[in-house]
Image 1 (cartoon, rainbow, N blue to C red):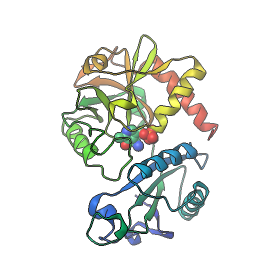
Image 2 (cartoon, protein in one colour):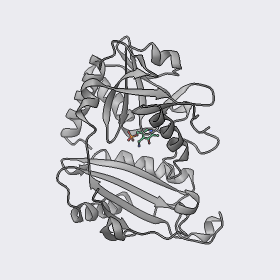
Image 3 (cartoon, rainbow, N blue to C red):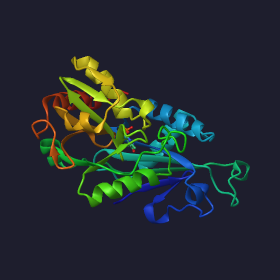
Image 4 (cartoon, rainbow, N blue to C red):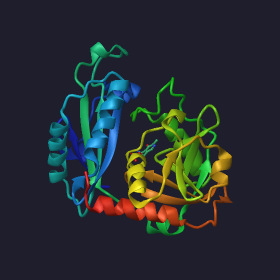
Length: 289
Ligand code: PMP
């Protein structure tokens, strides 16, 4: 891994990128982040990522100390300083900042801003060609009244524990249920099923991160004549689906072919997933923003 990092505007390699142990991001997990990637060297869907970042910040009463344009300039400085053979992975983190050992936000008047840039690495080709195996995990997605999954929070213990379970059980991803037993999303991606030609994903009200790829897929679907809808999904909907796939910024759309070792549909990547992925890639390559 060779990353280039901006810590409050100071750009260094990864060894010299340091942050105080009194930063409340470290002490309490108080902060929010975004993960973006570039296509044609431009951050894709930047405005949407910024919109979500502002909503995340608002939900933890954190004032972002930059405009969208100012942050874009800082990202550019960091990508310019990086050695990128191809496209960039960009992670922007904003924490409450450095202060005394108290939850009182008055103790931390200045947020810390970290930008991590490294080469984007595509998931293995085999994931797209053959699909992946996922498992439904026992770890329950945070209740929206606790740490709302809408917040793209640096406090990732809920997803980390679910991912640990998925890894232990040999899953490429773990599908998480909410406290009502409804499906929500995976630990680092959103979940879709395809039934009778319609792509269906759980509603935001189930308690999940509003993925940018998920959101964009509704528009891609309508452009190519594939209906994309929100509906409450249970285990049986996933097991009985014709196709399933997961979406995220760094993975686009990856077909799911088994869940808990049970085959989904024909057990091979499905045609609706393939059409949505191809249309998504076309839009990304055109670098629509
Ligand atoms: N859900 C979770 C929990 C995630 O961490 C991610 C990855 N950021 C996603 C969904 C996918 O979101 P996006 O399409 O914005 O990358």
